[in-house]
Length: 412
Ligand code: HSE
Image 1 (cartoon, rainbow, N blue to C red):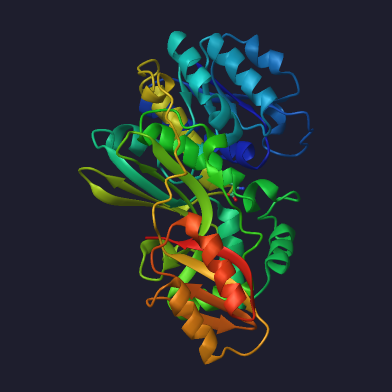
Image 2 (cartoon, protein in one colour; image 1 turned 30 degrees about the vertical axis):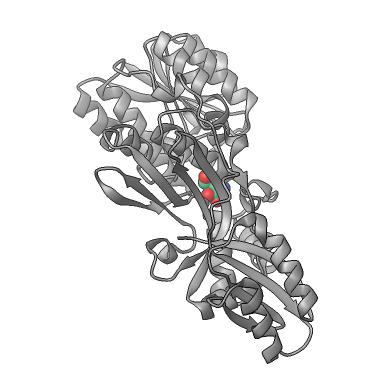
């Protein structure tokens, strides 16, 4: 018997239980062995649910049963799920997790422990929710040199930005609504400040570039400062604003890794990714661009990715090589100062006059274009270095009656 224990019966964990209960007979038939959800570890009582008869509040019950071959770790937080995963892998029990905090911080160590104990540590659900992206990067695309990844990896912020843009609403209004609907957490910081997407791009980049990318090295800017007026200006100029998680291989073998709101041209495929959907665009040396698109969050979509890992383990229980990123750290170089186009926002106290557009083109260059909405001037510069932005905006403020608000890069 191949017993499975699910630790943490929250949104994703309960989804995994639902899918296993619906599909375990089919899975058993496929692998010609009895596969069974046997334990659900959670401190909550769940009377009158399908989970009740599997419930225990003691992780020891799982570790004391030698027939448990796989533990699904769907507990939130960092240290406890990490310690549970480590203990299981050290005992040769496979671990599948959706916990991106654990994966971003400890995947190196846990992958090595799994390898040494001839079991597996898989985490397809940790990035992109239900979208198959980790296995394609690790296997299907692995003969390519991956040159670049651009993605929308956070459903909450994509929902907020989409709603701000389509309804002309402020960040605070849409955040409140997203919290009421259960899309955004009560404490939305990890999502809106970009840390969730930073962990996900670090996980994907480590696999793609075959060297460990430390998530704390990802340069991270959230969406709190994006205003409804920026969306209106961006739309007039032919763009939409998206929180883009991106990484790029540099010629010296280091990588850039960033999460920041960017202006995405309307004809870019990522511009069409709306609401809670996620997408990842991967540039391979042989494949060119491949797009992975789907639900980046949600109970059953994320649980589907967890169950895919369970099936992978049933098919190849011990055959795993050590992920290349375990052996090597990658340098993250975000200070390259490569010129790019910027969107700059200025508050205008008077109507736009000819002198403003003359000063704008004199200071930022003749190709600069602008749009104005509700007392806010938005302009898109020709390619300039980030280090030059501050000096140029000061010069513009001094020459005109404006106040600099923010800058965002244009996605090239
Ligand atoms: N908070 C995450 C998001 C959940 O909004 O994308 C999925 O990782």
